[in-house]
Length: 203
Image (cartoon, rainbow, N blue to C red; front, side, top):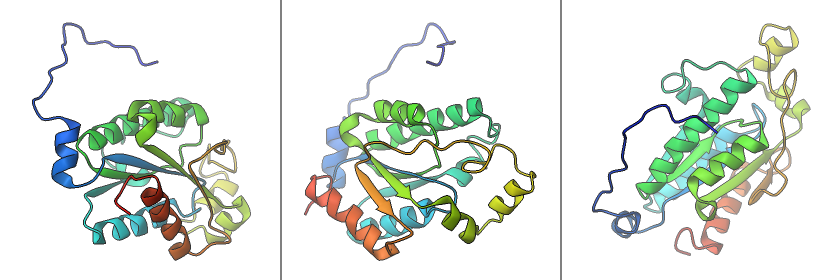
């Protein structure tokens, strides 16, 4: 738990509720949380899923791990403590976007189960959809679009998930995608179908 340092602060409730925003948007606000190794396909699928939702007229926003580290989380590294704070902050932001009635797609390695569970609790379990982007580290390393695995093997990048730092795979994700076996189109269709089936978006 993060210690509350500020005192004499009070929650100010606005007049417009989440239900009001969702009614205006024409759909629910929720979080689709993509987790998996680097180069497993998280960002690619988040972008493709957003495109599919946008084309259907839904209000969306992507929170991408690398992008967020350029601003909000630029003061964090990759130690276990910084990784936890990284996910805590993005979980809070995802919760705010959900409260805006926006569909937010979060693409972070988020290697620790306890941190993903904390993000789920921040976002309300019924509006948090964990998507496990499952791909063997050997395949991710073959892809290696950023050259990160090569640098990790050379010891240039320390605490690299899957090489010198652990990844704790989800035990019960809402959606499980094998990106070494499935195409981008198949993965996106499964996500959209899940959202329709469970009434996150109209069928």
